[in-house]
Image 1 (cartoon, helix red, strand yellow):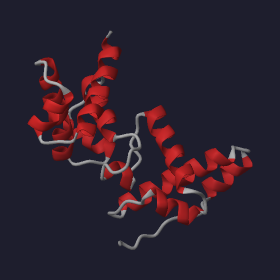
Image 2 (tube, rainbow, N blue to C red):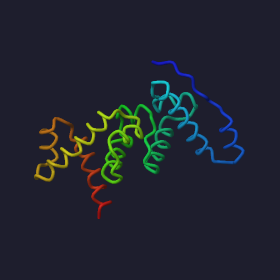
Image 3 (cartoon, helix red, strand yellow):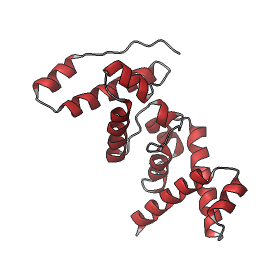
Image 4 (cartoon, helix red, strand yellow):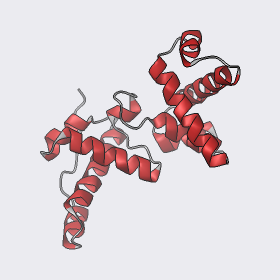
Amino acid sequence: MVPVVLDLSTSADIDIRLARKSRRRRLLEKCLRLCRQAYEQGTVLSNCDLAEILNVGSTHISRLLVEYERKTGEVVPRRATIHDVGTALTHKRIICHKRYVNGKPSDQIARETYHSIGAVDRYLGQYDRVRHCQLHGMSQIETAHTLGCSLFIVNEYLEIDRELEAKDA
């Protein structure tokens, strides 16, 4: 546990309420701010942390932030994405998209996704290895065994590859 100072209510919160933005939009803005503030102080919040702080369900928080990440292509710096835990939207997809669709270098991707350059390069390398195995006719199980990773990870990268191929078409 790392102590952090978070702004639970700001003038921006009042402005968005006066602008009659939806409760969902107000909650999203607050979640984004809290996650960024915690990250700037050297830690990350989990969905459960946010749920406890904001007195809403963690599933609601998860859905809200996953939808935001999918829509914007931006990684929210929270435990699920930074530590790659859970089954929510993986930052691997965003990292691969930024490289193979937008042509961004690793250092820029690292800054934009709150990752180290080493972590970005690891994800891109794993994507390349999975893709290479598939192009050489290996099954998903053979690929997982050869690369020493789970079948779930292989399938995740293959899904990303299908999405990237569809964008090229």
